[in-house]
Image 1 (cartoon, helix red, strand yellow):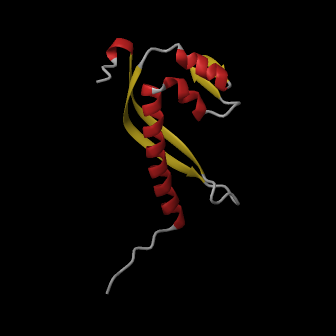
Image 2 (cartoon, rainbow, N blue to C red):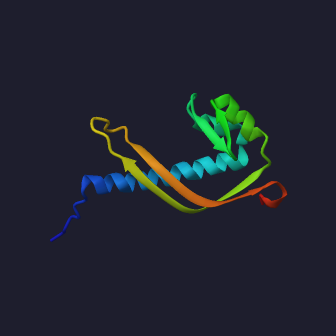
Image 3 (spheres, rainbow, N blue to C red):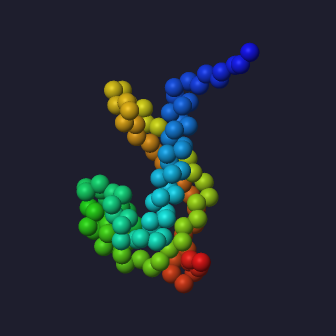
Length: 112
C-alpha cells in the first residue's frame, strides 16, 4: 500500500517561498555581477535603495548610483525566505527574503 505525505498549505507556501527566493537571488546576483546596467529594473519606480547611508530614490537614481560602483563578485552564504500571508491575495503571495554573503569589488573580484 502506497502512502502519501500530506503537506499543510502553510508548509507548501514556505517551501515555495524558499525555492522562489533562491531563484531570484541567483538571477539578481548574476545580473549585478555581469549586467550592472540592468539591476535597476528589479526595483519599482518609487523604490529607495539605501547604500552606505545614501538614499537613492527611484529607478533612475538607483541606476546612476550603481553605475558608479566598481565591478563585483557576489558569493551567497545563507538564504532565508518567509511568505507574507495576507487574506484574499492568492495566488499573488509576497515574500521577505534575507541573504548574507560577501561582495568583492574592483580588482579584488577575480571574475574568472
